[in-house]
Every structure is written in structure tokens, then in C-alpha cells.
Amino acid sequence: MSEQYTADEMMTVAAARQLRAGTACFVGIGLPSTAANLARATHAPGLVLIYESGCLGAKPDRLPLSIGDGVLADTADAVISVPEVFNYWLQPGRIDVGFLGAAQLDRYGNINTTVIGGEYTDPKVRLPGAGGAPEIAASCGEVVVIVRQSRRTFTERVDFVTSVGYGGGPGDRARLGLRGGGPRTVITDLGVLEADPDSCELTLTRLHPGVTVERVREATGWPLAVADELSTGEPPTAEELAVLRALEATMRTAA
Amino acid sequence: MAKLVPLADGIAELVRDGDTVALEGFTHLIPFAAGHEIIRQGRRDLTLVRMTPDVVYDQLIGAGCARRLVFSWGGNPGVGSLHRFRDAVQNSWPGPLELEEHSHAGMANRYVAGASGLPFAVLRGYTGTDLPRHTTNIRSIDCPFTGETLTAVPALNPDVTVVHAQRADRAGNVQMWGITGVQKEAVLAARRSLVTVEEIVDELTPVAGQVVLPGWAVTAVAHVPGGAHPSYAHGYSVRDNAFYVAWDEISRDRDTFQEWIARHVRDAEVQA
Image (tube, rainbow over the protein chains, first blue to last red):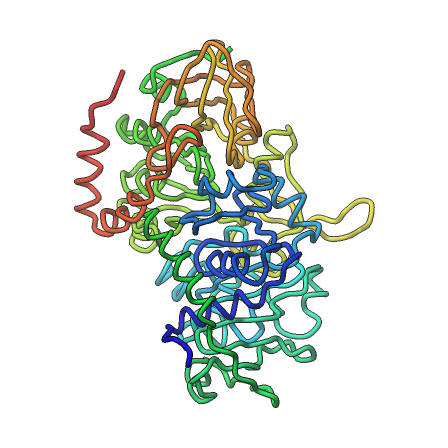
């Protein structure tokens, strides 16, 4: 019998399981940072966390509330300038995994974090914008997207391409000269989608326990491709839940 | 040699209406006190430049100091949206705000080009995104050696850059450490610069990971202890995370925002 857990906890645990020791991971604040620190505190102690504030190999013992939290600088192998992060580390392809969120995402993993609705100059909703994401999406070995799944977010077309996934389909990344592998995996609160190696289309490959294909289709704004061999993931273990909750408690104390 | 000046004099002398102004500091060492002094002195029509226009620019935008914003990420880090920034873009309140939008890699390289005395920087960036359709300052360029198509962005050379640092000596040599972001490039790219510091000391003791800006590369230094609050100065203060969370409520409503600015900025008692 496993413990009770929330859909968000399942999503974070699934994202953490995706990360392997010995790889370097570019981490943004929020769900990616939580997942990466959970991985480091459980199965992947050797995971190298890189924060765009210039902290290479940060080893925080609590969850940072911002990417420039002092605990990141205190525990990093090296603290470098922001131009150096992007020019020497990200651009040449030294970072294996880039972790991104999304306000909108399409079937080819193109991401919008800029504007929703209306015109660019007169949007319905103005979002924070690009940050490091366009070049993370371009240059990391692969990209993992972590995002709650709904029709509002999983849209047929994104209103603005902030970060390129597979563009309009197969061959587009090569045509654009993007050197990284692109969004291989999308982890949501309902399951896991993976880019099909031939069509590049995001395909449902794994359900979280208790979730049906129907429910995932309902939360997707395009006709969702489903893998022939659809699996169901393992629920969070007691250890994963305990470590995750302890980490999240450190953030509440800090705030 | 950098002059040691009171903050109000430094802002009065170095930041003028219509200027292009960069306040830098990547979460750490954000020059909030200097931003508040710009609001108190009622600067107008500024082009505000900053990679991460977070709470400090939300305050300047809401207070009506800005005409234009050059940036790459406009949010309240770890909390959510910037309501004054959104209100300006979506409803032109308190006035219209023109945007020039980039990615972090693009902005960082624009400062590097500015600091290097070059007209532009080259990077692998923006390709395939919608940003170049709206930002005319993003162009493509063919490598003269390989023929590969890359991206070019123009140098950023602010009229004035303002940063906060831990220490300066009496000759105006500035020392900062911890996360130092893009401040060195932003200061060297600017025509004028003002550095607020936690402490003025007789001699700068070396610190691991330090960045030192020689006094002859800085225009003025002002002694402003706590000048980064609610951001922090590594070794002197910790980030006031609760304030960033509270800002969400304060800034959501125009009246609440204006009351806050009146009480905590315009009518605040300022140390000389």
C-alpha cells in the first residue's frame, strides 16, 4: 500500500526519476529545481546542477526560492558570470539536460512563455518572456519539459514561439542549425509524453497511476498520439515522498 | 578616480530624464535604494535596461519613470508575474511602455559587446523563435570563415549603469563577490556608472571569487548600507523572500501600489 500523494508530487517524482547521476542539468526555479534537487537527494547524488545565475555544480541543502539564492553560490563548484554561463557552458553543448516549463506547448514541443492572446504589442496576457529558455532549448543535449496538462496549456498552436522544440516537424531542427536534441520528454501531472523518433510528435507513453488515456486526451488541445505499448508509472515511494516534502518544507521556512 | 558621493547627489548628477539606464544585479546585489532615489527625483522617459526586470523595475515602471524597457525576463522570481509591468503592457498604465525583448544569452552578449568596444556580438541564439519578428535588433550574420549563419545583436551602451556591491575603498575601487551576474560588463559598457556599496573601507581585503572594478573605471560610489534590500548582499544580508511574496499583493492593485510607493519611497526618510 503506498501513501497518499498529490498529482503535483507524482509529476515532480517522475521528473526527478528522469535525471541520472553524472549528467549536467540546467535548472530553472520552481518545479524543475524541486525535481532536480529531489533527484540529487535520492537516486542521483552525482547530478550536476547548473543555475543560470552562474552557479555550476550547486549543492543546496534546501530549495532555493530564486535562481540567485545565496545557498547556490555557497555550495557551487564554481560561481561564474552570466555571459560565461551562456557562452562557455550552454552554447558549446556542455550541458546534457535542460529543464523547462511552459505556459503553452504544441505537439512538436514548441514552447510559449511570452504572450497569450491578442497581438504581441497588445496581448491579452503578458508573461515573463524568454529568460534563458530559447538557447537552453537550442543547445542542451536534450530538453525535459515539466508542465501541468490542460487544454489551455497543450494547444494546437502556440501563440508565440519563445523556445523551439521540433518546429513544424521532422528535419526542422537541423534546418535551423539547432545543435541540441530538443524536447525528448514532457512530464505532466497526468503522465509522460515522449517525442516520436520519426514524426517528432509528442506521444503519450506512460500514465501516472489511476489516470486514464481518456483523461489525458481531454487535457490535450490536439488529437493526441498514444504509444502502442503504453505503460503505467510507479507511484512515489515512501522515501521519495518523504524527501520531497522535507525539501518543500525548507522553502516555506525560508519564505 | 570614482568620486564618493551621497546617493541623492549621485542620482541627480548621473541619471537624467530620457537616459538609457541599466540597473543590474542577478537576484543578488540589486540596487533597490538607487532605484527608489530615481523615483523620488521624478525621472521621466527613461529607457530601462535590465536582463531580469523584477520588483525594482516593477516599481520604476509603476511610478511612471519608464518609456521603454529592454529586457529578457520580466517576472517576480520564485513568485509569479509583475503586475505593474503587466498593467503597463496590457493597459498602458501609468503610460505606454515600449518593449525591446531579448533572451538572456542575447542580453548578456549585448553587454559584452558594449564593454568590449564592439558594435555587435555574435551568438547561436534566437533561431526559429518569434523574437526576431518583433525585435528588429536581432539579425542574422554569415560567418566570414565558415559561411555558417549566426545571430548578431547590437552592443548595449547605457548612458548610465547602476549596480550595488559589498565594498569600496576611499579611492573608489569596488569589490563584489558571490553571484556577480553581468555587472562588470554593464558598468564597463556604460558612459557613466554609479556603484552603491554596503561599506567603505580603508583597504579591500581579497575575497574568493571577487570581482574588482578599479576606481578609474567607475564614475561615482555612494555608501548605502542595505541598499540592495529586499535583494541581498552576500556576506552582509540575506534575501528578504517574504517581501518578494508580499510584493505580489502590494503591486496587484494600482491604489495599494501607489500608497506603498508614497509611504516607502517618496516620503521615506533617507539617510544623507
